[in-house]
Image (cartoon, rainbow, N blue to C red; front, side, top):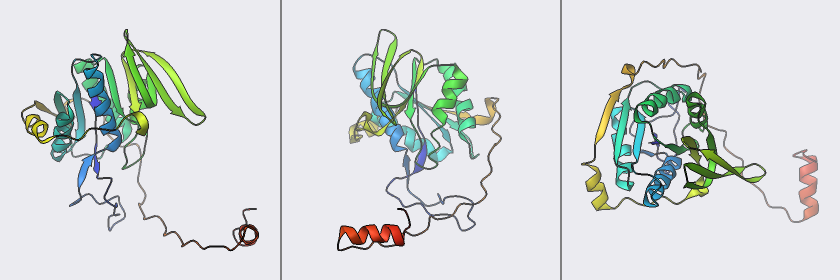
Length: 246
Protein backbone atom coordinates (compact mmCIF):
# COMPACT_ATOMS: atom_id res chain seq x y z
CA UNK A 1 0.00 0.00 0.00
CA UNK A 2 1.31 3.44 -0.97
CA UNK A 3 -0.21 6.54 0.64
CA UNK A 4 0.20 9.62 -1.57
CA UNK A 5 -0.63 13.29 -1.04
CA UNK A 6 -1.83 16.06 -3.34
CA UNK A 7 0.34 19.15 -2.84
CA UNK A 8 1.21 22.39 -4.60
CA UNK A 9 3.44 21.41 -7.52
CA UNK A 10 7.12 21.68 -6.63
CA UNK A 11 7.72 23.98 -9.63
CA UNK A 12 5.24 26.55 -8.29
CA UNK A 13 6.33 29.26 -5.86
CA UNK A 14 3.91 29.08 -2.90
CA UNK A 15 1.93 32.24 -2.10
CA UNK A 16 0.58 33.10 1.33
CA UNK A 17 -3.15 33.86 1.54
CA UNK A 18 -4.16 37.48 1.99
CA UNK A 19 -5.41 36.78 5.53
CA UNK A 20 -2.18 34.95 6.47
CA UNK A 21 -4.12 31.82 7.37
CA UNK A 22 -2.15 29.48 5.13
CA UNK A 23 -0.81 28.88 1.62
CA UNK A 24 -2.97 29.69 -1.39
CA UNK A 25 -4.15 26.59 -3.29
CA UNK A 26 -7.01 28.02 -5.36
CA UNK A 27 -6.08 28.20 -9.03
CA UNK A 28 -2.65 26.72 -8.31
CA UNK A 29 -1.21 23.69 -10.10
CA UNK A 30 -1.33 20.65 -7.83
CA UNK A 31 0.48 17.33 -8.22
CA UNK A 32 1.70 14.29 -6.31
CA UNK A 33 4.15 14.89 -3.49
CA UNK A 34 7.62 14.11 -4.97
CA UNK A 35 8.61 11.83 -2.10
CA UNK A 36 5.40 9.84 -2.68
CA UNK A 37 6.28 9.49 -6.37
CA UNK A 38 9.48 7.78 -5.22
CA UNK A 39 7.42 5.46 -3.01
CA UNK A 40 5.13 4.52 -5.93
CA UNK A 41 8.16 3.85 -8.12
CA UNK A 42 9.74 1.62 -5.49
CA UNK A 43 6.49 -0.32 -5.06
CA UNK A 44 6.37 -0.92 -8.82
CA UNK A 45 9.99 -2.10 -8.80
CA UNK A 46 9.27 -4.48 -5.92
CA UNK A 47 6.37 -5.95 -7.89
CA UNK A 48 8.58 -6.30 -10.96
CA UNK A 49 11.05 -8.26 -8.82
CA UNK A 50 8.26 -10.56 -7.62
CA UNK A 51 8.30 -9.20 -4.07
CA UNK A 52 4.75 -7.81 -4.36
CA UNK A 53 1.62 -8.99 -6.14
CA UNK A 54 -0.58 -5.86 -5.98
CA UNK A 55 -0.07 -2.13 -5.41
CA UNK A 56 -2.86 -0.09 -3.82
CA UNK A 57 -2.48 3.69 -3.64
CA UNK A 58 -4.41 5.73 -1.10
CA UNK A 59 -4.93 9.45 -0.70
CA UNK A 60 -6.93 11.45 1.81
CA UNK A 61 -8.50 14.71 0.71
CA UNK A 62 -10.91 16.41 -1.62
CA UNK A 63 -12.50 14.91 -4.73
CA UNK A 64 -10.03 16.91 -6.84
CA UNK A 65 -7.27 14.60 -5.55
CA UNK A 66 -8.39 11.85 -7.94
CA UNK A 67 -5.88 12.87 -10.68
CA UNK A 68 -3.04 12.17 -8.23
CA UNK A 69 -4.34 8.62 -7.84
CA UNK A 70 -4.70 8.25 -11.62
CA UNK A 71 -1.10 9.37 -12.02
CA UNK A 72 0.02 6.70 -9.54
CA UNK A 73 -1.95 4.07 -11.44
CA UNK A 74 -0.41 5.27 -14.71
CA UNK A 75 2.98 4.68 -13.08
CA UNK A 76 1.95 1.10 -12.33
CA UNK A 77 -0.33 0.91 -9.30
CA UNK A 78 -3.20 -1.56 -9.67
CA UNK A 79 -6.04 0.25 -7.89
CA UNK A 80 -6.71 3.29 -5.79
CA UNK A 81 -8.67 4.45 -2.75
CA UNK A 82 -9.75 8.03 -2.08
CA UNK A 83 -10.71 8.76 1.51
CA UNK A 84 -12.72 11.88 0.81
CA UNK A 85 -12.92 14.81 3.21
CA UNK A 86 -12.94 18.60 3.00
CA UNK A 87 -11.23 18.94 6.39
CA UNK A 88 -7.66 20.15 6.77
CA UNK A 89 -5.95 17.18 8.39
CA UNK A 90 -2.90 16.94 10.62
CA UNK A 91 -0.51 13.94 10.50
CA UNK A 92 -2.21 12.30 13.50
CA UNK A 93 -5.60 12.30 11.79
CA UNK A 94 -4.07 11.12 8.51
CA UNK A 95 -2.33 8.23 10.29
CA UNK A 96 -5.59 7.25 12.02
CA UNK A 97 -7.43 7.17 8.70
CA UNK A 98 -4.63 5.24 7.03
CA UNK A 99 -4.72 2.68 9.84
CA UNK A 100 -8.38 1.95 9.09
CA UNK A 101 -7.48 1.32 5.44
CA UNK A 102 -4.50 -0.85 6.42
CA UNK A 103 -6.73 -2.89 8.74
CA UNK A 104 -9.15 -3.43 5.86
CA UNK A 105 -6.64 -4.10 3.08
CA UNK A 106 -4.08 -6.03 5.17
CA UNK A 107 -1.01 -5.13 3.07
CA UNK A 108 2.37 -6.76 3.58
CA UNK A 109 4.15 -3.39 3.33
CA UNK A 110 3.25 0.28 3.57
CA UNK A 111 5.73 2.46 1.68
CA UNK A 112 5.33 6.22 1.59
CA UNK A 113 7.25 9.47 1.21
CA UNK A 114 9.23 10.54 4.26
CA UNK A 115 7.48 13.94 4.25
CA UNK A 116 5.19 16.16 2.22
CA UNK A 117 6.67 19.28 0.69
CA UNK A 118 3.74 21.46 1.81
CA UNK A 119 4.23 21.18 5.57
CA UNK A 120 7.50 19.17 5.87
CA UNK A 121 6.05 17.45 8.95
CA UNK A 122 7.87 14.11 8.49
CA UNK A 123 5.49 12.52 10.98
CA UNK A 124 2.72 10.50 9.31
CA UNK A 125 4.80 7.39 8.58
CA UNK A 126 6.15 7.21 12.11
CA UNK A 127 2.73 7.76 13.70
CA UNK A 128 1.18 5.11 11.45
CA UNK A 129 3.87 2.57 12.37
CA UNK A 130 3.31 3.27 16.06
CA UNK A 131 -0.46 2.90 15.83
CA UNK A 132 -0.10 -0.34 13.85
CA UNK A 133 2.68 -1.55 16.17
CA UNK A 134 4.73 -2.39 13.05
CA UNK A 135 8.50 -1.99 12.63
CA UNK A 136 9.56 1.04 10.62
CA UNK A 137 12.44 1.99 8.34
CA UNK A 138 12.55 5.72 7.70
CA UNK A 139 14.54 7.82 5.17
CA UNK A 140 15.16 4.78 2.95
CA UNK A 141 17.82 5.12 0.25
CA UNK A 142 17.78 1.38 -0.60
CA UNK A 143 15.38 -1.48 0.14
CA UNK A 144 15.31 -5.19 -0.55
CA UNK A 145 12.68 -7.78 0.32
CA UNK A 146 13.48 -11.44 0.89
CA UNK A 147 12.02 -14.31 2.92
CA UNK A 148 9.36 -12.24 4.64
CA UNK A 149 11.78 -9.51 5.74
CA UNK A 150 12.81 -6.12 4.38
CA UNK A 151 16.26 -4.60 4.60
CA UNK A 152 16.30 -0.82 4.60
CA UNK A 153 19.38 1.34 4.16
CA UNK A 154 18.47 4.64 5.76
CA UNK A 155 20.13 8.02 5.65
CA UNK A 156 21.00 9.22 9.15
CA UNK A 157 22.91 12.27 10.38
CA UNK A 158 26.12 10.31 10.78
CA UNK A 159 25.97 8.43 7.47
CA UNK A 160 24.09 5.28 6.44
CA UNK A 161 22.37 2.81 8.74
CA UNK A 162 20.98 -0.58 7.68
CA UNK A 163 18.01 -2.09 9.51
CA UNK A 164 16.48 -5.53 9.01
CA UNK A 165 12.72 -5.60 9.61
CA UNK A 166 10.09 -8.30 9.75
CA UNK A 167 7.11 -7.75 7.47
CA UNK A 168 4.59 -6.19 7.62
CA UNK A 169 6.40 -2.90 8.10
CA UNK A 170 6.22 0.81 7.31
CA UNK A 171 8.96 2.32 5.13
CA UNK A 172 9.39 6.01 4.29
CA UNK A 173 11.37 6.97 1.21
CA UNK A 174 14.21 9.45 0.76
CA UNK A 175 15.28 11.23 -2.43
CA UNK A 176 18.12 8.91 -3.35
CA UNK A 177 16.05 5.71 -3.32
CA UNK A 178 15.22 5.91 -7.05
CA UNK A 179 14.17 8.14 -9.92
CA UNK A 180 10.43 7.85 -10.64
CA UNK A 181 9.43 6.87 -14.15
CA UNK A 182 7.32 9.06 -16.40
CA UNK A 183 3.80 7.89 -17.08
CA UNK A 184 3.46 7.06 -20.76
CA UNK A 185 0.36 7.99 -22.73
CA UNK A 186 -0.80 4.36 -23.13
CA UNK A 187 -0.47 3.84 -19.37
CA UNK A 188 -2.31 7.10 -18.68
CA UNK A 189 -5.19 5.84 -20.82
CA UNK A 190 -5.14 2.44 -19.08
CA UNK A 191 -5.17 4.14 -15.67
CA UNK A 192 -8.57 5.68 -16.47
CA UNK A 193 -10.06 2.18 -16.46
CA UNK A 194 -8.42 0.98 -13.24
CA UNK A 195 -10.67 0.83 -10.14
CA UNK A 196 -10.80 3.90 -7.91
CA UNK A 197 -12.88 3.52 -4.75
CA UNK A 198 -14.15 6.53 -2.80
CA UNK A 199 -14.78 6.30 0.95
CA UNK A 200 -16.21 9.14 3.03
CA UNK A 201 -13.80 9.88 5.87
CA UNK A 202 -16.61 10.51 8.34
CA UNK A 203 -17.81 6.90 7.95
CA UNK A 204 -14.57 5.46 9.34
CA UNK A 205 -15.18 6.40 12.97
CA UNK A 206 -11.98 8.43 13.33
CA UNK A 207 -11.57 11.55 15.45
CA UNK A 208 -10.28 14.15 12.99
CA UNK A 209 -10.30 17.13 15.37
CA UNK A 210 -7.14 19.25 15.01
CA UNK A 211 -4.65 19.33 17.88
CA UNK A 212 -2.57 22.19 16.49
CA UNK A 213 -3.44 25.82 15.89
CA UNK A 214 -1.92 27.90 13.10
CA UNK A 215 -1.44 31.40 14.46
CA UNK A 216 -0.23 33.05 11.27
CA UNK A 217 1.60 32.22 8.05
CA UNK A 218 4.02 34.79 6.60
CA UNK A 219 6.51 34.97 3.76
CA UNK A 220 10.15 34.45 4.77
CA UNK A 221 12.22 37.66 4.79
CA UNK A 222 13.94 38.56 1.54
CA UNK A 223 17.61 37.63 1.65
CA UNK A 224 20.06 40.48 1.26
CA UNK A 225 22.35 40.40 -1.75
CA UNK A 226 25.85 39.07 -1.14
CA UNK A 227 29.05 41.01 -1.70
CA UNK A 228 32.47 40.13 -3.04
CA UNK A 229 35.63 40.64 -1.04
CA UNK A 230 39.11 41.18 -2.41
CA UNK A 231 41.03 39.01 0.05
CA UNK A 232 40.80 36.47 2.83
CA UNK A 233 41.84 39.14 5.29
CA UNK A 234 38.90 41.33 4.27
CA UNK A 235 36.56 38.36 4.61
CA UNK A 236 37.80 37.64 8.12
CA UNK A 237 37.43 41.30 9.03
CA UNK A 238 33.81 41.44 7.88
CA UNK A 239 32.95 38.18 9.68
CA UNK A 240 34.51 39.56 12.85
CA UNK A 241 33.49 43.23 12.78
CA UNK A 242 30.20 43.26 10.84
CA UNK A 243 28.64 39.81 11.11
CA UNK A 244 30.27 39.26 14.53
CA UNK A 245 30.34 35.48 14.06
CA UNK A 246 34.04 35.06 14.92
